[in-house]
Image (cartoon, rainbow, N blue to C red):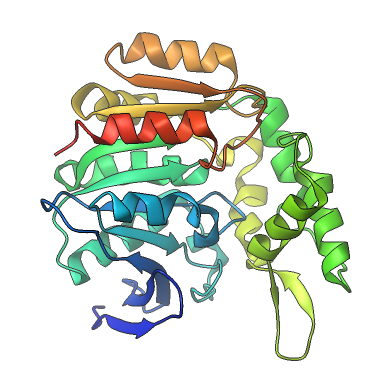
Length: 300
């Protein structure tokens, strides 16, 4: 099912872009217009499992100012995108087809994909479906396999009910589940983090900004459901397309050993490690930002 894209201005550096998924969901993306200069392939940014497009609010405007249009999506069931009536559609392949539908409806033939965690899995999936759509890829703290301890940590809170009465409660929750990744964060940082992952409803209630049913396919298929054997997809991507791997130095999901295996499987892949950060770098870190801009300077 197709649909006409609608734009609505926001009082910030992006406009709202809406598109219709193949099964009729109304989906959302932040659309950042490129700055002046020679036109280059846009960047499509895809967030992690329980997150949304707000995760790219630091890096996206900078990428746009450098001359690339940026589309930061809310995957179905997250943020301002519709929740799926059938929770079994919350899978990387379905997400990938949603993103490819966005490209079709927006008349984008080719793009650079920036995928954080699950967003990187989606990038690998859509590369297998439509390889010509991928100019290059930035994989943020994710690979074709993951460390079991990180997977267990994420599974322990994904889709679980949370009682939040105040923004202070929300910040405390954000710190509790992500403190291991960002030990240097201040109270102000955690408040900002909470406002990216929670949403306040008109009645004043504060809730997590995703459908708890995103965990249904994971529970149905078991602990390995998040990451099947993606090594063939990774090799197809990283051996044929310019690829940058960003790893948090303290990541419990993308271990140093897995990163080394990825480098051996794709010797031409660019790599940067962000010190003092776990899963996943927010890409506002100087090391991550510098590596991304250096990488993109060679991607035309």
